[in-house]
Length: 88
Image 1 (cartoon, rainbow, N blue to C red):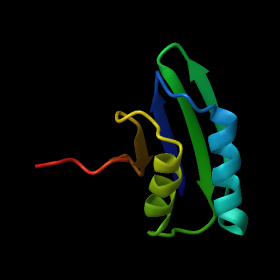
Image 2 (tube, rainbow, N blue to C red):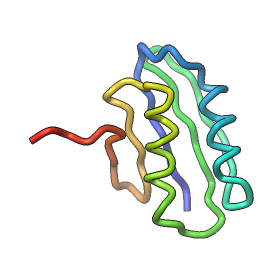
Image 3 (cartoon, rainbow, N blue to C red):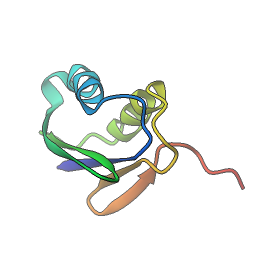
Image 4 (cartoon, helix red, strand yellow):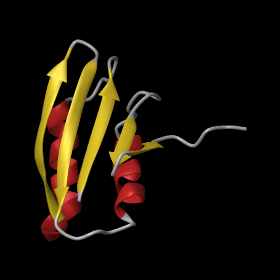
C-alpha cells in the first residue's frame, strides 16, 4: 500500500524533518520511499508493507505536531484525508 502526503506552501517545517518523524513512527511497518519539492509545497511518499488502518491517524498526529498548513492532505488508495478535522 502506498500513502502520499501533500503539504502546501507556507509550512515552517522542512520536508526532511517530517520524513524523519514518519520513518521513526513506521519502524518495520513501512518506509518513506520518495517525495519532492515544488513551488506550491512538497510531497512525501510512503510505502507500507502491510495494510494498517491505524496509520492515517498516526500520520495525522505527526503532521499536526509540525503544524502543517490546513490544506495538507493524506492520500491512500485514491482517497483523500484531511489532517485537521473540518468544523460543521
